[in-house]
Image 1 (spheres, rainbow, N blue to C red):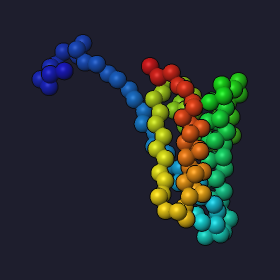
Image 2: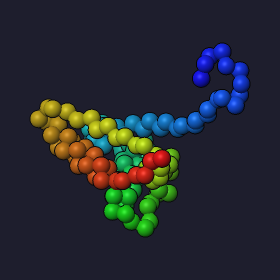
Image 3: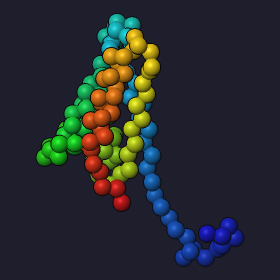
Length: 120
């Protein structure tokens, strides 16, 4: 529209939602939390576990998708299971000592890649 336009009938409104989720914490409790088991670490790992189940259920076309099993997946439900355009960025390390974490991350991302959404 023209900046000087005052006719409201020429306005076009579009509503969007942007959800950014940092899934850091896929590492072991020992590495990411200094070996101590705390509520934050358990919550992060539980959220990632349930997210993996949701991704698997969506990729397989399952009747039941366990969105309600975690706060993380409840928050991400509109991004994961509907008419959304969703991107997943997997950050990996080229360091050989991190190869196990890198492989796990890439497998996780590959399973997410198999989810087919129908964006409008």
